[in-house]
Image (cartoon, rainbow, N blue to C red; front, side, top):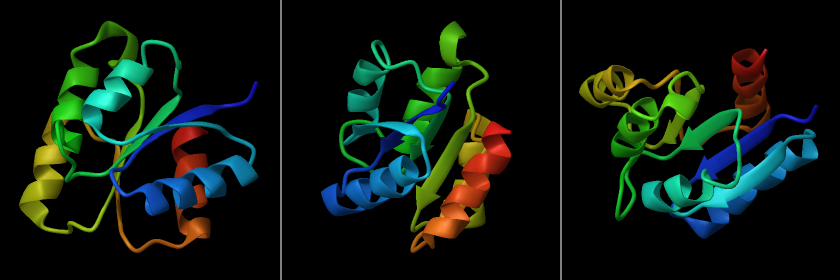
Length: 121
């Protein structure tokens, strides 16, 4: 069965690049432009993995992670942050909210796929 991933990123061009990389590797991908959009889409799209930016309008990545961890259906889904942020306190806040991993932008497509494969098994 094809693994399903939702990408949450407010930059359209970056969201498209992430989606293209994942789709080319055989994953089914949904896109969301911020945390609230992701929560709305996850009512219909049952994801196996969430890849989210940290800084976004409406709802940031940490707020999204906390919301997902509070939902029984998404309590244990892997959540990877893909962000320009690299400060230890932001990584710690994401981890405390329930993040599974952290990738710093810019990223190489192979690096992203390696992390995705590791997390999804």
